[in-house]
Amino acid sequence: MLAYLRRVREAWMDYPHQPGEMIGGRYKVVRLLGIGSYGLTYLCTDTESGKSAAVKQAKPSKRARAVKLLQREADILQQMHHRCIPQYIEWIAPGRNKVYMVSEYIEGSTLEDLIFEQEQRFTETECILYTLKLLERVRYVHEQGFVHMDIRIPNVIQRAGEPWLIDFGLALGIGEDSQEVFPGSMMHARDPQRRDAQMYSDLYDIGHFMLFMLYSSYNPAPGQEPAEWQEELRLHPQTRHFLERLLQIGPRYEDSAVALQDLRRLSRLLQ
Ligand SMILES: Nc1ncnc2c1ncn2[C@@H]1O[C@H](COP(=O)(O)OP(=O)(O)OP(=O)(O)O)[C@@H](O)[C@H]1O
Image (cartoon, rainbow, N blue to C red; front, top):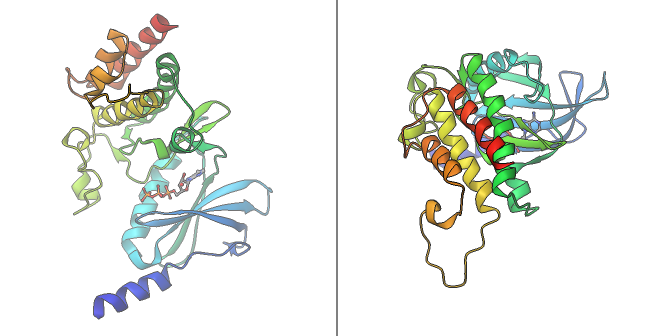
């Protein structure tokens, strides 16, 4: 019974802002974009500039923990100044555990929506060229001393043909201990290959990202038995080798600068 009452109280505490409500006297809620483990994100209109903004609220039921994590995300986002990473705008704190981070809203479709809802198909060359752009963003993040730690198809938004990298909620400083920052969390432990706050963890995620793109144009023959991606996808040997290094099947890349160099070479080869 106590657990039930606690859940009811949490749901009540985390009841989202409704369209038309104002946040910080400036941002008018258009709609809720999503509810994550520690935050609620809204599409808002900045009533001063008329522009759209993404406003992330620390989940009230998670109290100081959610505030701390959102503060971390804000600190990291503030250090990013790249045309394809949302710009940090401001921090709003109307109450002790009532805080919001405002950032640029990226209008577009996530890669997840493009592949699974809009059924966009990517050829091998298109995948390589797209991944090249994405890896350039990721390299920028690494150059600032951080690893993103959550590069997945829902966290890449396509706007005007360009991939934008969003959601720095799990980002860590290179070499930082994830268990110290997120104690007891399983978020960084999905695969041993992506557990460490090292460049190769983001590269491993990019390998999976590429597989989603490549499988978008895969059509198995009737009755074909499922097999490993190396057999199912007919890839140029250099693409396959590159993917194997990202996925740590071959010798992994320790440095994203080297992976980027190889990917540039590969894109010239395939074009
Ligand atoms: N700057 C942004 N521009 C456009 N959409 C955004 C932006 N930030 C977040 N979103 C969208 O808002 C939704 C919620 O995002 P958010 O990162 O807050 O949580 P989540 O990814 O659902 O959860 P978690 O962070 O726990 O993984 C997602 O659908 C995401 O695409």
